[in-house]
Length: 276
Image (tube, one colour):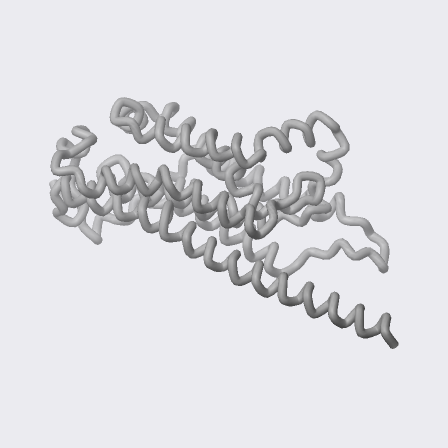
């Protein structure tokens, strides 16, 4: 059996996932409506980019967990890897960018929440957690187990989203209580985070044998051989897990440069005013 374009129309519509997504959207809407101060002079606004970021994250969650992408991840290593890259590298930062900081203030009133968040999003802890979970689930024994047990598969996805949010927090934190790292710190942090995916992706891409035997026994997407499918998966990890992070490092470098230049101009203007 060969999977073709005409067969890419299977949506899972898993009730538990639909309910979970509905609860996430409902919680977001309630938080914006309930916790936003109602003063005319209030500075806490809902930016359009925040609504767009959250909406895109929700759409990607639907694509990742309900669309044919999820169904065919059982048959194609490349499709499965793309699904994981969404859950690890695209959805978490979009969720963080979509949440106004003031919407989290009621939760942050509890000291243990702030302490736990500070511990988990400490750069060293975040690096260890993210790469440990990434490596663990890509071990052949664990990977194959997710394909035969739906509960384990769901746990895998939840763990990816959880460590994804933790890992991206130092870069896209929406709150001052647990702030973002400095620009130089973010650059170093992102570079370190790119190392393990680069190694795993290279190993998968250049392996001359099929690492996950289960894919040798499943229908092939578009007639690809298991080895070609595996190479596609490895390239996807390298593109999103490595190249994507390096692009962000470059963006942060220019933002840092512009910030420093602006600060120097501000200091020069202040000195000029003081000499008048």
